[in-house]
Length: 160
Image 1 (cartoon, rainbow, N blue to C red):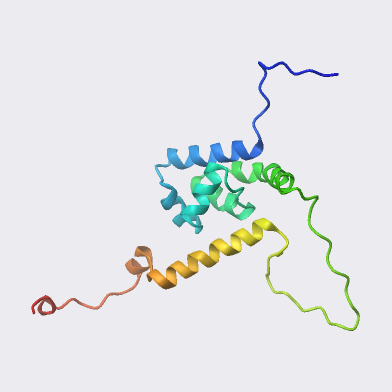
Image 2 (image 1 turned 30 degrees about the vertical axis):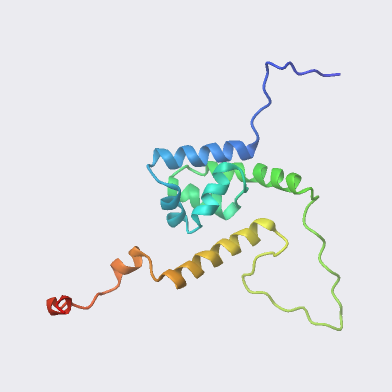
């Protein structure tokens, strides 16, 4: 029987290393969670949830953060281990099998669709939808306004 002494701590989980890398790199770059979220096109809530461990994030999230934070792929490199932890935490053994194809029904073609059985893809799609809804409800962001030509301001408009 192998015994590990209490003084030798277990190696940190990949998700813990991922969270630490993400937060550490974000802080070193001087970015708030909101600023990082805007740059990677995910919600601030997603960034906060991943950093706090309430959510695992997604491979796409890791890739975008690597790109914005200049981490040379460290987050994406951790992703396979993080995904394995996510599957273990969900209590699943992997993706469910596809339903059998029935010869009497044609299989609809899917163009560039994510696998709805992948929890990470579903979370990504929800985050993107939230961002789009926010843009529609709140109007264009400041970055969009800076690129859009504005009509000239007439000083007489301020007079009542």
